[in-house]
Image (tube, rainbow, N blue to C red; front, side, top):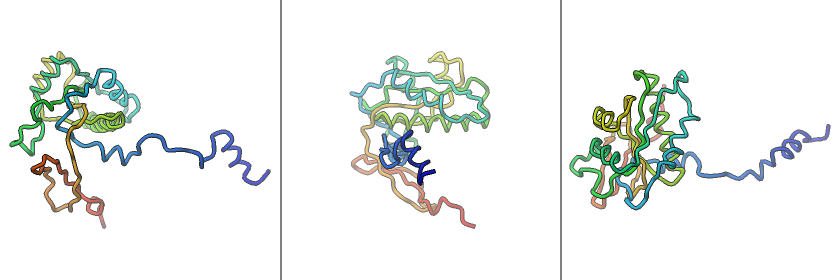
Length: 213
């Protein structure tokens, strides 16, 4: 057998590894762009088909025990959007700012529900789902915010949901500037804003995250 036969044959079938080009944004880039956004561009409309693409990641992600108990309500109708905005709270660490500012409210939502009584496995799925959908949103040039401070009963009743809502995901185009600030484990984790409304998010640095024996 000729030298490097298998490598040459592999390259004939799949292409040379030297010619493989990176497509799209890497995970680190998506993660850095995936910030919690509380102010959205009112001129950018996110339609139901875009939200369907974002929800579509749930057909590919992992599910604890493969129970796949999550269901998704796409909200773009102006009346339903008003209902959701009236029943959510954001920026809990900055109550004095009354976020979102006027005319920067989100105009598209995905309400994540459970089609059975939630258990610990359901909440594992919820975390996987929300993060995956946000990364997809960033990939298509949008941003989002996970909202767990909301009036569950009003959302369920006024949107005629048959499943229990667990979280609300706001989707839109950010108008905010957000910066990460490396901190030690002992420092304050509270996010804050400066006079120019730049939003700072403290993040514990890697060495403090790793358990040392």
